[in-house]
Image 1 (cartoon, helix red, strand yellow):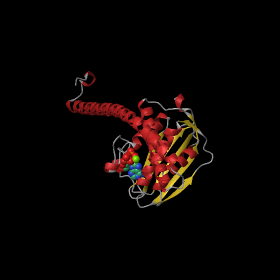
Image 2 (cartoon, rainbow, N blue to C red):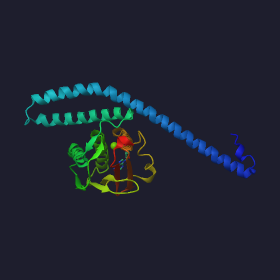
Image 3 (tube, rainbow, N blue to C red):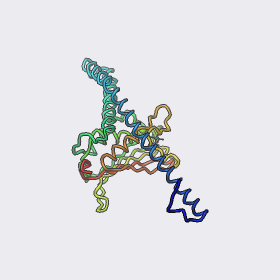
Image 4 (spheres, rainbow, N blue to C red):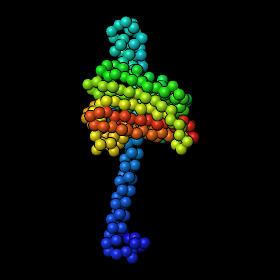
Length: 262
Ligand SMILES: Nc1ncnc2c1ncn2[C@@H]1O[C@H](COP(=O)(O)OP(=O)(O)O)[C@@H](O)[C@H]1O
Ligand SMILES: [Mg+2]
């Protein structure tokens, strides 16, 4: 590459400058490849979500019909409720993927964060038998303007990850706080902590990448990627602190102002 500004430099200086430039170009190229991959992944996700939506609608329709025909005290009723709840979850997921691929935040309304957390916890109650749950909600946390279904999806993803990190039991702590800051603006923070296996330092950079998973066949590697996109679309951020063998804390910070205004 010809770089006239640096032509008078000594041979050593010149090669150092060239090395820096080459490194910077390689970085920029890597960033471009990365964003191109993300666009492709987004399109692919939208396609898959679209294909899933129709068959899922008929699965749900038939499941509702069968459930109506079964009395509440029948042993089948519980199983059918699970089928319906889980199919509704997939339905929400496909809708959020479609929303995301359109770079939209979805319908915005005032959201009760504590209610969304409780709903997400309720969906996971079958998977929490060996886990002690602590809810430390700050009553001062106000409603937040956002997409309720997308925010619930984020909480579900984070709670599920926390539970999967504690297969032999442990403590799940869900904490909320209103953080007032004149510099960064007022925020609501929601932190989800587990006492699970933790995340090794070499994985920290990768966990938010699409398709990064350490759960083999049972993982998709999309939970944190999708969650981060949703929270960014709300003008917020997700941070993580983790110590291998001790546990992890994921903290979602959401601004109090209108996300559609940013
Ligand atoms: N609470 C957690 N404790 C330990 N590891 C976690 C936790 N949350 C996420 N991870 C790591 O991040 C990876 C990506 O998570 P995610 O995007 O939700 O995909 P998936 O759950 O399908 O693997 C997980 O496979 C795991 O290695
Ligand atoms: Mg996950």
